[in-house]
Amino acid sequence: MIKQREQWGSKLGFILAAAGSAVGLGNIWKFPYLVGENGGAAFIILYLICVLLVGLPAVMAEILIGRTTQKNPVGCFRELSKKNPFWMGVGLLGIITGFIILSYYNVIAGWSLGYIIESVKGSFHNMENPEIAGELFFQNSTNFKWVLPLHAGFMFFTIAIIYSGVNKGIEKASKFLMPALLLFIFILVVRGITLDGAQKGIDYLLKADFSSVTAKTVSLALGQAFFSLSLGMGALLTYGSYMSKKDNIITSSVSIVALDTLIAIFAGFMIFPALFALQMQPDQGPALIFNILPVMFNSIPGGYFFRILFFILLSVAALTSTISLLEVITAYVVDEFKIPRKKATILLGVIVFLIGIPNALSFGVMQDFTIFGKTFFNLFDYIASNIFLPLGGLCITIFVGWFWKKQDVVDNITEGSKGISPIIINIWFYLVKFIVPVLIFLIFLTSLGIITI
Ligand code: PFF
Image (cartoon, rainbow, N blue to C red; front, top):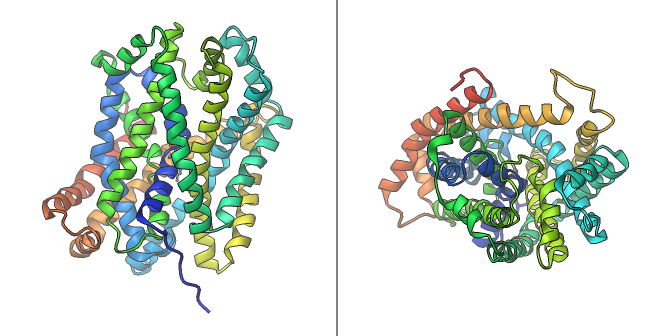
């Protein structure tokens, strides 16, 4: 008996799940430090342009492929390309990228879980400066007895949700976790902007200084838009495959992109006003979250409580992303190899956990074990973010713009989107055909160092 493919229970369920995939460590950890290092509001403006010009059209293209075929990334391309091995390879590249990203993303997600525990224990209580927090971070991240159980624990939560399926797992969890996440962010933003001296941070986020913007900044903004929107590896394509043909792809995509972007900007408003109020520097790079913030909360009334809330927020954001990564590979194995979902989920979760062990140990015992001069963690991140994601995104948009019959593309996107002007659909189509691939190609070359600007 062939089991009917699951579908989202509602349009809202789909939007929350897809926004959950998009909102993650990229928004709360990476976006604020990129803003801090690249000129504040100027970077935000560039980011918004990239999101509108590249992100939104590409999100629509991925969801469209998934919804049209109702299959996993390989199955989608098999159907649409009439079994062309190149395009099926593009689908497979997405699955491999999912494996790679999940295997290191889950490690950082595990740290955020560990920092909830550290916060509850009051480990930061007497810390006066970020250097001391840095020492704790160093001790923890190099200690396999700290890192591995957290890596396993986070994978356990991810498996538990995917195990229950699309409706009872992903949709139910997203409907609970996403509103909670919005509430926590709201509380932390209000706390940040009402501190004495917060105005300087707000100014930093609102006043654009374009003097420090270079072509490299543009490429950083575009790369971040891509990672943040979960583009290029079939996550949105897989979520789109559970979408009803009655639902509107265009308005859903706008909501997903708007939520992702708003949460990234809110993360800035949560962090910078407090940072400036306490006279700390904004351009601290990746250390911002684990070294500077925990200490910053010491000087804030109610800091103990807000610090715990912050790390819960970070963990929730990461969880709604790890589930989408595990779902991509699970959907593939369930569809293609006819393995029951529950079995596939556990099997794949354990495999990803094992592949992730060298990543988890990259900061400690395996620090000196390098390939091409990079630790496992850095190598995996580099391959996925700088090569596979842009390559996947490039191929997916080229497929929609050049290899899928235009009339079919238009008919499929219009289904469920009645009332949307054909002009908008045409603008979208030509962005996907020309602008998006060219811009992705340029970031691809820049991030590989083939062109330097
Ligand atoms: N969008 C996630 C973030 O910003 O943290 C990361 C991510 C999740 C990338 C899922 C790709 C993906 F398929």
